[in-house]
Image (cartoon, rainbow over all chains, first blue to last red; front, side):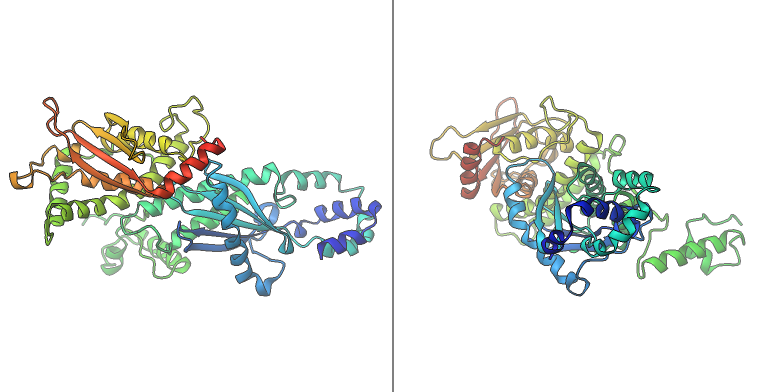
Length: 214
Length: 253
């Protein structure tokens, strides 16, 4: 689908299209699905949220909302094979972007705790091709007065490019903050490894980390 | 009558007549907020959940050796109930240590990343966060140095590889004077018993957490100088040895 609409845009208006989509803040909101899996692939925790930076409302809007709930889990779990390969070649805890699922434009970033729990973050940029139809009219009018806001959007927006260094850094900060809270959970004498994390405080903390960094 | 402390929420609600009027609405309000955002959550009286505590406050958090010895003695007594023999007892101690190993692993890495010191790796790259151990040797160095320091305040005394060609998967970590055994004297008919099986369980937990399937056992090897010298025999599983060969060929360190 994405390929078809890309081909439809004439090369001259492609620039205009990209500017106007960057320009419109409502189109820059990334949707995230974060999950923690135990070393034996049991889901311990999951949460869906959206971009909060730059006036985002923090609500996830996946491209296919009716199937997102299970498709996100499918996509995340299908990246486990790649994760387990990367696990033994890269000794770091933050493994960065490891997998992409093009049909849903889903990018998966992984973080591995030393004790084998996997933090996986699926991020899905907003559906850009739908805005290209209106871009021809919008682009010309907004091109002059919006150069400043365009640069601001592109420099601060994590949503614009899921594999950019800024995004990787932001996700790293997010993962580190979740890791801190995960260690606190694991250190609780009432928590055994492999148990679902039900603490509402933990959920609040992860949401706050998402708001802060993503 | 003295005003109740601010955190005694239950108290101030139950005997409301005593509580000062300025304090009550505030506490009730915060409680209402808390119950709103998370129904069924019970917050400790000082409102500090485990998530509000710091994981790095270790300077003055050392425990007294006496209370540790007492607690550990009770753990051994507890494990000793309904056991069939020394091996069974050691297995139970091992199982008690295992979950601790898994936890310590995460804590160890957390502490060394947040302080970003060279506490974990002896290599020169001190600023970058430490890597997860991928090879057996890195893992054993992690246990021998940082883990031992976290637990006992000093590094272990020796780390050896089995010289026998039949058992290349066996490694030995030696502690000349294990702290857990300081106040434990086994009766003569149980002279084989080594309560450091608990520490062996911790090691096993650490190895397993890192993805190295292992069996660890504690053995008495007294010398004249060190009567309670203990050797921890670490035996890695076959899949680990196979992976080790693959990683060596791939040049992973």
